[in-house]
Length: 68
Image (cartoon, rainbow, N blue to C red):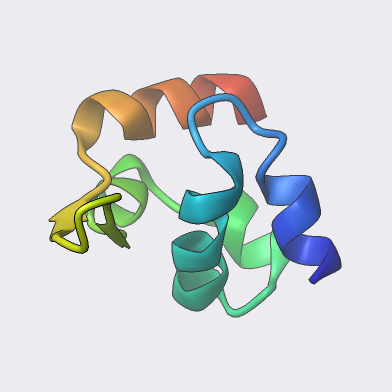
């Protein structure tokens, strides 16, 4: 989707994580921009080995800095 292509360009996200971001914010740039650090940190992503994990606080901070 266009949403994923744009979100994937944000430092710290990439195309694989953009799918989880789209699921979390429903393709809404407004919801994404208003999300808190905790909202970002809690996004569940699936890594290369198929394991589910959270985005995490460090990555959430990096993303919010890029969006500021």
